[in-house]
Length: 270
Figure 1: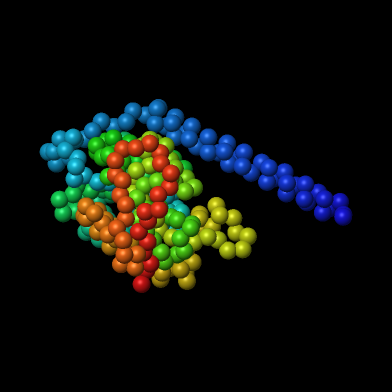
Figure 2: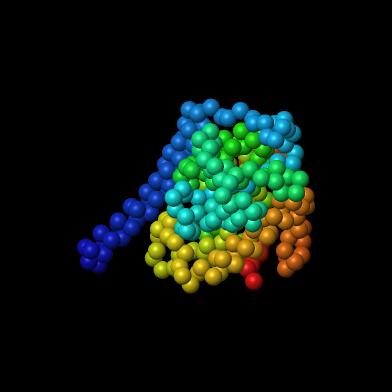
């Protein structure tokens, strides 16, 4: 066996040995940053909205598009793109305003009898939860009424689905929200982006833009995912897609971090 081969195998073993500890270290650093940002800035006080007391929040919901500010069009920010499409569907796409108290852009509107708060965090994906927690405090919205929209590597492009709480499944933006809200009950709309092919690193792939060939599929996903989103927001007991033919289990009550629940409503663009 040549020296080059031996050195290559030793280097591979060393890098594999350090991969897990480094991942844990990065996870701890991100969690620390979340806590520091939450502690160094006072949470906004509950806000009076349209003459209603802040405690009157049973019909108030928030939808959050997770992503990286300034990276519109990237796979990792597809949640923000869906949220923007939702705002356009609601008829007032130019009503976004920057809100320093919540470190994000906010759009407040009505959907039937629901007071709807749309949020685009202006923080990096790994600390999106700080913005979400601040907005939840300001608008008096409990975690179970906060819906997160985010990219999903484990779904191919063209598929999307509602997940009713549970673990972050490795998504750093969702993990930040879980850390800052101290619960994992938030429902999520997961938009499939698929996994990279070949030797393309995952981080480079998710930060890249959709290709010209992928764009027609993405456009269809945008439209259909907003349809599902509107149904979910206005239906007290949303149904799964006809192909699945079953009702998803919903556990919308305060709880400690729970193991993953297989309660996904999956859809595929037509």
